Length: 143
Image (tube, rainbow, N blue to C red; front, side):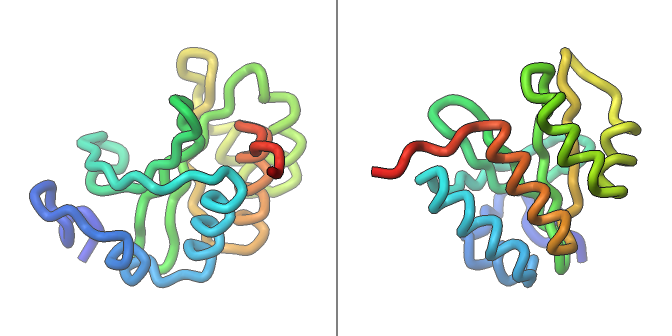
């Protein structure tokens, strides 16, 4: 059963249900990383987007979207927007990972950005996603 079939629009999941469905150490790591690095909490929202419908987890810093995470069984997909301002720096990371390079090259720009739907299922991809998040939004300075 897919995530969108398991949790219909009227059945909002708790974060624990999302954790259990994904059942991946990469999921636990990315959530911990984002929440501690950016000092933000997840927002569980429903999307009718045809590309990835259903409940997802969004992270925003102030009013800017950091990323959106889409649950899948044993992995998750991370949506990161790579705009023109960060493209050169992001491409260094993207082009060092064959999967990300192919994804980036096959993703058409939309309004000056590439909206990458990255399947996170290896440590290498997880680490690349963390680096892309750093580039996307600088973490707050330590207190």
